[in-house]
Image (cartoon, rainbow, N blue to C red):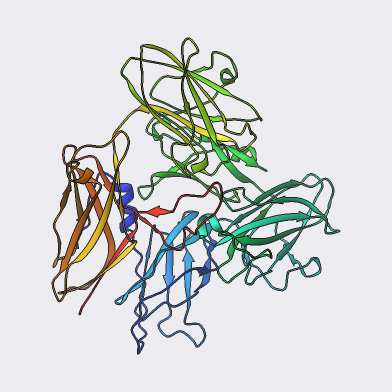
Length: 567
């Protein structure tokens, strides 16, 4: 099998990353792996973890694909009775903190990809019973990650911590956002009498975080419970085996965001961290860039969490105090700037010059980065005339975006605020003013496909989003890196053919071919070969339905999978 090459090497490297782990046991009935979730759903760098799947690893031998290196996975050849669902994950010392994707596969098929989180703190397992103050699980370490599950309806977990006067505790839960747990979690902080001192629910989408500075030394409790992410008619606390969470409890350093919120490698400068309990050493950090990601990683062994920030196509500047003046902060297009609406009703002002006929794309991102600002932007000309109000460009999209053609030479002003006049520490945003560029993206109908060798062709529907302003070039859609004996003719999408919004690929395999591996569907501009994108698909089971006013978009990843089986 030859590996495909592309101008988008970071994406393809991640798609093709592979960790092969074989189990030599046998089974009477052949079955593919089937996995909804992992328990525990993560581990600490440098440690070995016993992990279980909820359903089945399938018929041996079983292999595991991972989205990045750093994990050594062992599946027992002959598992002991009662341990057929278990395997071992060794997180190497070279492994990077963050989110890994795992896919189990054998000759019969593959599981859907599932998340596994790697952290830097010691880990413990939530122990029952811990539903009341008397039975609260004692946390002795100053910084720890608890792997827990709200296993049944009405379940409540409580953890006891000791705090000194003036110590700041960060309690941060990861469940729905990265693990796909179908829960809307709640955290409460209680004093030794059981009085609720603080409660948080939706800090990062549906996942809660509490930050609390102890006014006096004593015993405190963290209580967690949940409601279903997809609300139903029940009014009691929810729970199920799938309500898995990771709860970080720390009085050590913890980061909320970086300044700037994005990074351009040419700057070769560290970013400033904003959070809690940060030492002077951790006030700044140099982002780490990898060929396996289009994001930069911010991590350190002392940090209680890690952060990924997007890579910018232009250097990123910070807002200055001039944003609070009538004239505003001067920007030079193309521009990318990180700002913060630090107080309620605050308005940040920027100005830039542009020429008549220039096509600019103006964006303010916050919600998609995990922060609460609902950007509301106004564009004025030099005389103060309101030209455009920029709000949500489409349903369920809460960041601001506008493609705009400059009507005359001159200076223009932008006002950035929160739609509901809120503000605060976490109300950060990333403003970009860039030349408008037509582009496209691809989405496959499914995350994985199965083809029977020597049988009828496998048809794969690919949707093409010709983004605004409409990308009108022809796009060749093909599959990269197919093994010998497997063919798929490229298909060209043309605007004149029903708008060029979709194509159908037909994949065929000779009768003796078997294959398990990544499926890389690429779209390439016929006019500009360097403009190439890899198809994504919605990941089932990690994008639970959310009936809320601010739903999170479905999770789309480029990690498609192909199984070719004999008849």
